[in-house]
Amino acid sequence: MTNQKMRGSEKLLSAWKTRSLSEESVREIAKALDESPAQVVAARVIGGNNATGVQLSLSYSGDDVPRCGNDILFWFKWHHIHGGEMRPPRIIIDGTPFPDLVRMELDFGVVRAGPREEFNLPGQLNREFGLGG
Image 1: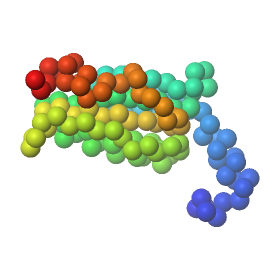
Image 2: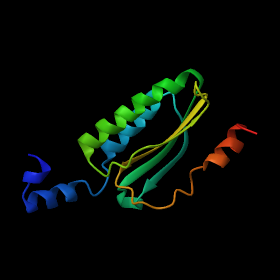
Image 3: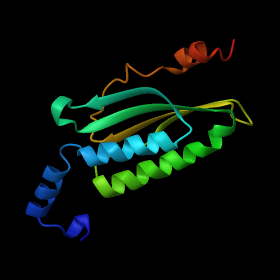
Image 4: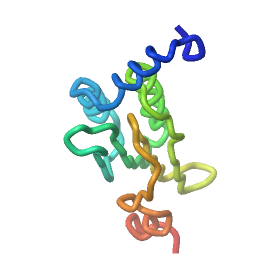
């Protein structure tokens, strides 16, 4: 049933169901990270004991850069199955025309907008990886 045709009670129950992450949904993310060439730079669980979301900062370098699309595809599929707010990924690319390093931040589930103080800003990325000047 499409979201527009759902009754109020169905919308409420759907929101209740997706209010927190299940252990299964987090295991799916962990499995995808194990299969990914990405280096996990930072991970943050939002919501404490009743987690509602996960923020990940991933880094790809060298021959692994083109494979970041696989993780974006997983992110889409995960949200299709488990729901949550689909905030667009934040992607930083270093190197043109051929990227040497790609940094991607993904939010899974419900992650309320707020400062991403744990994640590096572009200048910090340059200092961390010795890029630029």
